Each structure stands twice: as C-alpha cells, then as structure tokens.
Image (cartoon, rainbow, N blue to C red; front, side, top):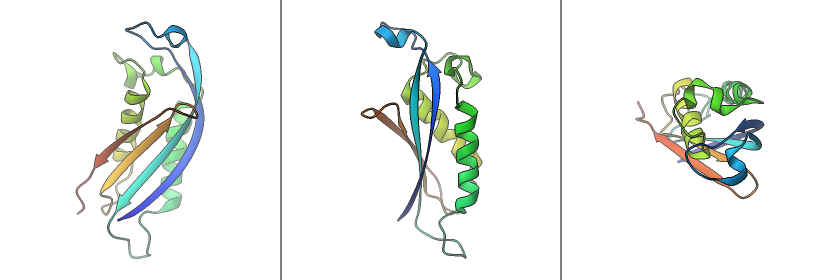
Length: 128
C-alpha cells in the first residue's frame, strides 16, 4: 500500500454549543494543521499515486476556504457543534468529492487542533 501525505496549516475560529465547555463556549481561534493522507495499491502510468501538483492545489483551496473564518457561520456546520470531529469529517468529504483518482483506496484527514489534540476521519474508496 502506498500512502502520501501533505499538510497545510491555517487559523479558524469557532465556539462550542450544547454544553458547558468553559472558554470553548466563547469565540476562540485554533491554529489547525490539516494533514491529507491518500492511500492506494497501484501507481499511475508515471509511477505516481496521484498528481501531487493537483492535490496541493485542492489542499490549498480547502485550507484557504476555512482560513480566518468563524466555523459556526458556515453552511456545512449548520445544526452542528463545530467540534474537531465534525470538522475532520467535513474536510474529508470535501477531498473525497475533489479527488477523482481511480486508484485511491482511502482518503484520510488528520486534523490537529493544537500540539496535543488531533482527530482523524477516513473514507474507504472502491478502486476501479
């Protein structure tokens, strides 16, 4: 199995809802580190798992969309507590839609909220 990973960092804001989480109930920012991991068992005709330039372009676009935003105000978080778990899933689904490579068997997002807390979410894919 081949696995490729790329990272981008960005700052975004949120506040948690539905419970008493102290300071997290008030608007605050996090310096997120988004790691996109792609896996597959075969390479393309050039010997690559994916086109790295294309993936970097998608990664930058996704990170740029969330950069400096209040997550609570975004439509994809409507009705959701903007937890790191929900955020990792939303990010992973976004990459699943953006990356059409037929040889990818898994897309995984690892999202760091700070130096010690991270969540991952993965989507298995059928290799064509």
